[in-house]
Figure (cartoon, rainbow, N blue to C red):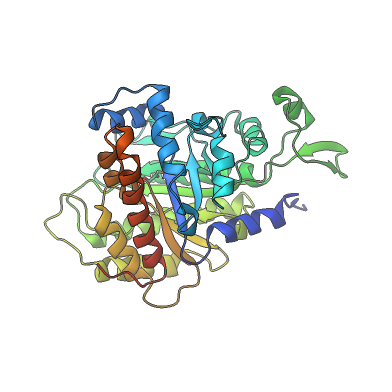
Length: 366
Ligand code: 13P
């Protein structure tokens, strides 16, 4: 059997390399409306579209953000949204030299037959949604599933997480649907003729970010996190290979290897770096262009220090960040919903973005 490569293969590699470029990382600003509501509530604001628009306008218009940020992950609402001044958010990102991305998973639901664990929904209709997102300007996408250490993880939960990520990654790179889907969404993507079957097919051309988040919760030590992470990444790469995912055209979003949040042990940045790099060397092929860590509830400074420690020597991949909370926490608080605080809030965002940019280069000093 000959496996067809994506019509976008070159573009996928180019997009992934652009995002994984020296001194830059990803701003995750793809909180669902429900999660964004919690963030807004923390500063006493109502969860209205206008408030979400005001906050996201503040983020994307921070002057010079593109020097440190290569990609921004958006929630669907933001991909189609305009900024407060009427310009499209995706156009503002383009002007800043930031590649727009899109969260495509549909969130977590209980996994029947497991130990109170969850699985991630969103494969149904993914083809058509992704084709439309590409047309709207997205060039990469994200699927976040989670694995819980205190609840297991069970074999079932790990296998399900890996398989879902692999199916999503394959669909994002090379779709198998025909012209039919393109007609439904009324945005014909690239069409190519499949000579064997004489079908017209479409490809989606989005670089998939593969994110099996190993939750920080728990009292376990760093060794246990390391053991679980090895298992999760082994399964994920096995499933991705089975699904013919092109590793040069993906990005990873792992959790760092740390003790559980309630563990009595604390790890230094050097210990986190040692365990995390050992994991990456054992499990991640060098063809993968970028490892873009999530912050997962670490403090802003901790997330920067840990990243910096991982970049003290050469790595086969670009080792960088895709933080939400560790880039936004102070920015959000500083803004507090007041127009007169926008500049100070943008400065707070730029401060974290610059610190993480330096950490990507291994040059951060606190
Ligand atoms: P945190 O950096 O807040 O963990 O968010 C990561 C994430 O997955 C959002 O895209």
